[in-house]
Length: 185
Image 1 (cartoon, rainbow, N blue to C red):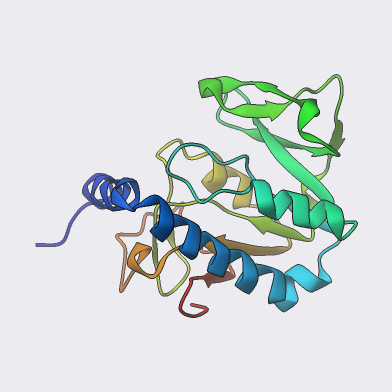
Image 2: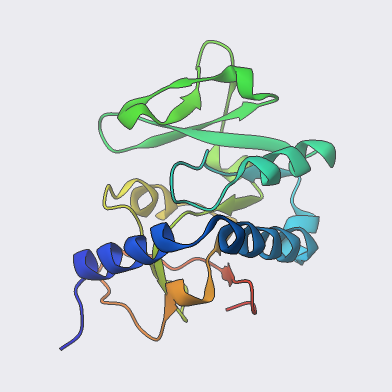
């Protein structure tokens, strides 16, 4: 019997949390290198990305790399109606604690960006399949946002986060590309 989304999420989060600091740093470095070497990254001038928390792959070095390369960095603000709005940030001082205590842009200090103006969206997730479908953190924010997102999407995952096939719901949308430390899915 195959695992459901909740079980897959829980099992994978447990594995992510069990990584040693050295294992985590090694995987993150490989993921970053593959991301910034990708054509999707090289072509993008405006990148959407989350501020990572806890066991998630650290996005801080990716954001700094984007700034170093002169790319605009957009991060989401989650709204109570399960919608997201992205804002351009130029430094981390434009962030404040938002919904779920996640650092989010302060709308009074950051510039709102239209979703079609982001060339590349780095979509977080916990478990993925080879077709680009993902299980996120259960809130459905990205599922709603991706419905009419017109540009490229990419996710970063360790090889153990990518399985053959996920249970798919009608509202699930795949990402364009999954970068792992071993290959591109």
